[in-house]
Image: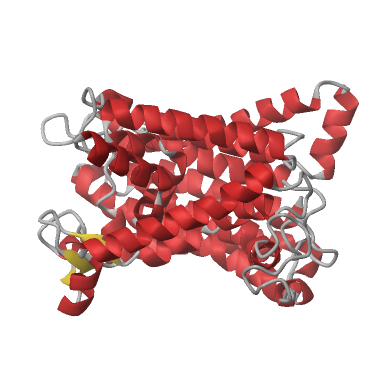
Length: 451
């Protein structure tokens, strides 16, 4: 991550390791896996029919109050969010282009903390927030208006077979910069990455329209994925509704590249937990090889292990050849169940980092040129290190986040299995997925607390 920009009290991702747990790490791991297994057994006994298979049923949701819907659906609200996105981006770009190459430059905290980590709570709470504020979407819209074109349509149609693969590649490019590039805390690589990002997004939008941004923009794709756990949704007719997160999650389109996208998000977080462990550092030192190359291989390996293991686990069952889906489609039809796990791991891994370094970034944003200015009135704020001063509470939150994420994932997978699998395979057919989720839980808790 970013060496040197975290305050002297808070370490990289906060405190709350194995030594801080009120119980040994082994018991936390055993308890977490036991909770997952018990939850599955309860589901098998009590949840006999799919609840989210009917689009006209629970998925439909409850319309929001007319006053709120009127505001949210208005052009003024949409342009207010676009303007806010442009202003925030402009402030960021000013610091990026004209600011000094120092770790106190707010660019690093804005990019790696407020954007990358902050997109999780923002999307879960408010829905597709990045899409609404995306500067790329705004630029594409303004360009289309200036030329008399339609921002939703490009030169040609976006190929359906490509799906979310561009987003998965973009997400991997970001986590590689963040976790592997030894120069990630210098402005040069960040400038290069963002220049390439804007160029690819704007050219792609000109060719394929806004569909390109939905499928290729790594931040928008990430936000839209997490927004499926928010209570905000729209019916097929565009009506704004409140919907239960599980019902909303069931509406995630299972297109190509979805498994790769969740594998990159999940695998990169696991790698971030592992790369600074004594075992990995010693292994790299003993090999005496290219550290960047080894870390790249390891990052790719973590993502591949998640993708391959999930694919194998979801295909260890039979489907009805007449009424069921294609067997090869099962991984992406069940991939929505990984989204709650990603949220759980992001919360466990980055909570104290986001809260404490996020406060530091807000302070630094008042002084984008690092000249001792107080342009936003936040320079005199102080960072609250409550989480780091209460490591046991932080450790408890981490365990709960991981376990709850997996339990919600099991519930989502169980409901989808009841919808997809023939009756004789509805329990046995889930055992492979349950086994891999138990392995994810145990490994994740070990990496967070026991490694």
